[in-house]
Amino acid sequence: MSSIQQYINYRKSLAKYLEELRELINVPVTEVTLVPLDEVARIRKKLVEKITICPQKKFRIPFPEKTGQRFRTFIEQLEQLNSSPIYIWTEAANGCGLFQASSLIKINLDFSYDVNSQGIIVILTKDLRDRMIWDFFEENSEKIIEVELMGETWPQSRCYEI
Image 1 (spheres, rainbow, N blue to C red):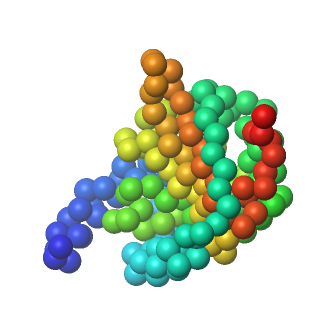
Image 2: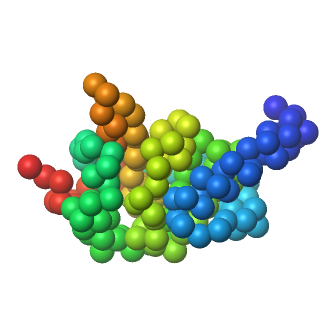
């Protein structure tokens, strides 16, 4: 893809992406706060090298449950296991840049189901030791969020074990 086409795609996607991020962290986000694309490429390369063979854990909950106390406790537990700043990675980040938040607990768990048209949000610790994927979808007319944990510490969380 030419740099002109990349720039056009970037400009078309940026406003929607910044709004998506604003809803996910409940603060205004600007273009200058995004990690540049060349750095995103370096992070992606390191990520592939680092988190390929690692412990995993996966569970599903009804989408509205993510605003409940049990899920908040789960997020706080993950923060205690690895308190590194985080990157929020959605499809738009590939063309616009990653957003870095100071902490996992900064995420607004009350985000709407349609915050992201792909229904996938990846949370990655800046130290690249842990990753969480939120995949939200409908199944039998119920909105679901599937949470997948990968990495050195986050899969140790016991909050959603049965």
